[in-house]
Amino acid sequence: MIDQEQFRSETRTWLEDNCPKGMRNLTFHWEDAHQVYNSEDAEAWRAKMAEKGWIAPTWPTAYGGGGLSREQAMILNQEMGRIKATPASSGMGLSMIGPTLLEFGTEEQKQRHLPSICDGTIGWCQGYSEPGAGSDLAALQTKAVIQGDQFIINGQKIWTSGAQYADWMFALVRTNPDAPKHDGISFVLLDMHQQGITVKPIKLISGSSPFCETFLDNAVAQRADLIGELNKGWTIGKRLLQYERSGIGGLSGGGKKSAKKNNPMADIAKHYLGESSGKIADSSARSKVLSHSMNERAFQLTTRRVVQENQEGKTPGAATSIFKLVGSTLAKNSAELKSELMGSSGLGWQGEDAFASAELTATRAWLNSRAVTIYGGTNEVQMNIISKRVLGLPD
Image (cartoon, rainbow, N blue to C red; front, side, top):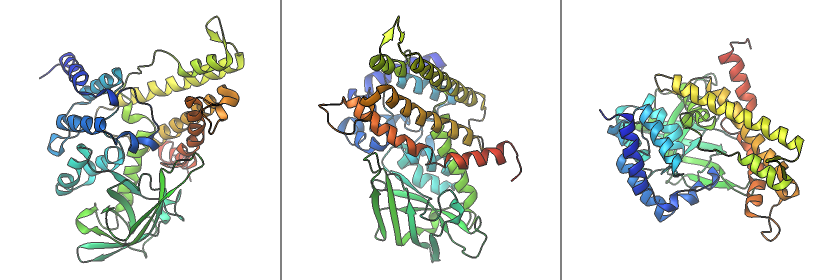
């Protein structure tokens, strides 16, 4: 069996030889991922990583994964971080529906859907929230009626991130309208490339359109793509949310070592507010940067410890809400502090003659950051879950 140091050496050499320059040193918001992955370098990188099974490095080789141990996957992450390599693929296939299928899918469903996630050829979106069912997701009304070997689906989903680019959707639908609201819900998969599905992107205050309205008018899902039992989809839907919150909260990358030796926030403060003897000149700003940096570092160390202590390598249950709550709040605070340190330069919306590109990006990041405490479950929902499911407090 290959030892870790040999694996690290071989991995480092392979990455140096195969990762295109165009897929290194990239900085982008997840909303722009579709553009980043739409290039010749991205396609070549995806093909090479898929051949190694390293798009989904810990998944079984039978489905196109790499079959790596957790320790080997950590080494791969660290070596990719060393050369600042962008992951060859990303999205809800890897972070949400893939792990859910590994846990709840039949062998036939795994064989049919997981390989296209492992090679990055199929994109997924999430059909959960509805205009009248957001934080109270179990109030969803999108209806699915069985006709032979198919579900005929009618209703509307909203905030379907990336639906305009997705090939497939995983969705919660109501299959028994007479059951209590947490019952009578089923978890299905459906092809987005069919008549009866209309997608309308929603333009946000930040200027981007990552979220969409999705209308389902006699859309079809196959009975073979029912995950789990009929009318028992709520349990599966909740488990998928734990995978989502694990990713947002940083647990999916908790084994990475921080490659940053400097403090980007401190560098921003020094640039805009000046420095004295190597320190941020403004004492108030210095205190804010120090406090934020300590909180970020403590969060990184905590996620790393949780991952290392998790011997089974499984995503935790309700405790993922802690990481989602803290991680999203830190992300929002980070964007807010960055704009604050920039002063009036951090308020630019347009005009590259008046604002630097990084300043315009910071403004949009600040506006985008408001959403991170909402999607994947609002902070208020996470606090309710923590109080009930983690701390065991009464309703």
